[in-house]
Image (cartoon, rainbow, N blue to C red; front, side):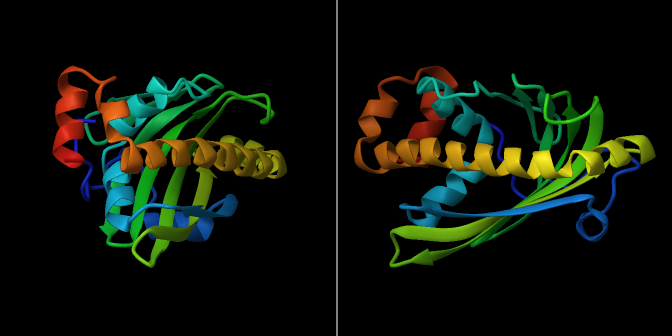
Length: 204
């Protein structure tokens, strides 16, 4: 991920709902806990460089095979299961990252094609300098009345799907983080070109 997403402004369109309002008016709200054995500085670098993180994910052939590419104001994410959109980092601190997202859902877990807007929030604390413990928060609202109504109908299934996907993805991410910390050359030797240059810059 050559593009750094540091505090990029939320500009998902003129009708974008401000982050605070979206949290208050969200139709679907979900929260999941997580623990990762890594210093907070390493975790922050991964969240700040999502294209590179996607490249590492694909190197391991983890599923789903996300396609993450740089976009005008953030990154574009294509999930082959039918969830596509763009993410922009709108707020960052030492122990948090907040992303604004807008995209479409065309998945068996929802009753129809839906366009929605969301806020994804990672909050975490560092323990003993080698572990972070945190929460992942999701706030979703349909782009219009029909999409929001359908989103509400699918809320239960979506929450279960979000929890399952997040749990599985985090388990795979932990494998990447472990090798990043303990066997970086195994990753470095599989990269070429711009991703290799970025990896060497971030993880000397």
